[in-house]
Amino acid sequence: MEPYKLFDAEYKFACLIWDNEPINSTDLVKLSLQKLGWKKSTTYTVLRKLCERGILRNEEATVTAIIKKTEAQKYESQTVVDKAFNGSLPQFLTAFLGEKKLSEKEAEELKRIIEEATR
Image (cartoon, rainbow, N blue to C red; front, top):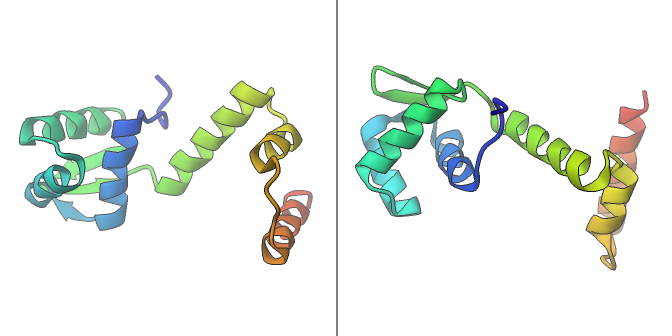
């Protein structure tokens, strides 16, 4: 399995850590119960698996992320573009926008991003 690939439940769990790191593992169990409805055993199983895959770290009962949220998002978004649109960003944007109208601010931001990417 690719190192940055996160299934939906894993991504939600990782988001708890990204949003609260560093977090004590006991607090993580409580947060997982509150936000995800997970039991302690589920929390520790997913934590162990993500640690084994090099996504999270659990040292001395303190959990932190090795892979940052932006890295996981970059991987996931590239996977969608590659799989569904043959790697074509213009095709993706056309499908994504559909009938949606961009605000002037959004259009300017996209222009800026595209200009920076071509340098």
